[in-house]
Length: 429
Image (cartoon, rainbow, N blue to C red; front, side, top):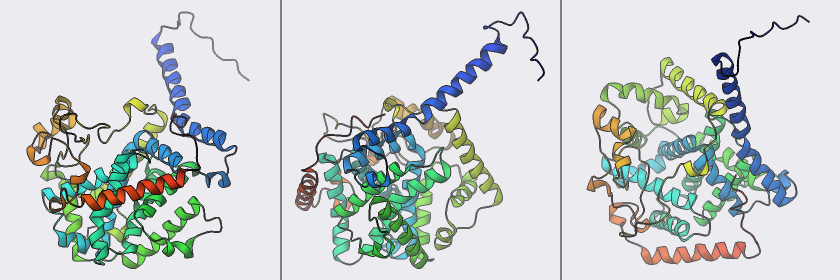
């Protein structure tokens, strides 16, 4: 073996030739140590609480444990991909004619109404997704959503298969998107948490699961449920996701919201990139053109580069920098909550210096125009859960909502009466 050449005698630690590579190496090692700490910590904590980390022990996961894991995935581990995947989950439902016909008939996807519906849907989901399982806000959000669906279910305009398919997308799309496009795949622990949480949501919505029976495995645990609803939803798409005028109408209504702040000259290119992220069957059902090679190259190159940067160069997001979607406490003057993010129109966003002058706001001001927080049309005073939904349903159904809320709370108490302890603090990594 040849001896290494001697280092220059005048080489010192402060020399940039030593300091810069050394600092870079230390930074990369630090990112590697911290990047997987939360994932590994969740597994170690679960193993400590249950004595072992196996498929059988995963079947013992409580709803509290599932919620804590899901909250961390949404706010810290995969905040961007999870939010995008939820948007596309909602978008995919418009490829089913039985769903799109009803939505098109209600006129809720045109102009400002389209962005408000998207915002209200996102806020409602966030309310029962990110608030603790035993919180009043969680139960109120779930009861409000049940009320908004109730009359359509009673009239037979919303079917159980349509609801089960919609539920499947919210349970599956974040996993699919993270596994395909983000810096790592979800673990069995995290997939179990997704299954436990969304299976419970379906039960609170009284969606029957008998349609999943032919696809259930022998274990009949949460992961079996997740695999079953995955297989069922793919079969459902194969049979039901077909071209229709209502699909196309809703697709363009949503795409116009998504591209609202995109300059006209770039809209065609933006559409090609969005089309790249759509499955072929969905694209055909919505009558959207196939993307070109340049669109695919840009999208997949960006996603691959982003995943590499996050995995190797970006430290994990700490708790105090978590991706918050709404205020934790109501405004003391109005009693309403504020949203922190928006896609096209700033629904429920409080007009602060930051919200009106952050980088996105500057682009809106000086590059392509658009709306900023503060316009009274978009309710800068915030939102109340009982007012979410179509304008003609604003404030209605309080008696039914309170009754359903009480039923949901009683259901939760009865299910957790024999369970002690709170996993929320020990699971925060």
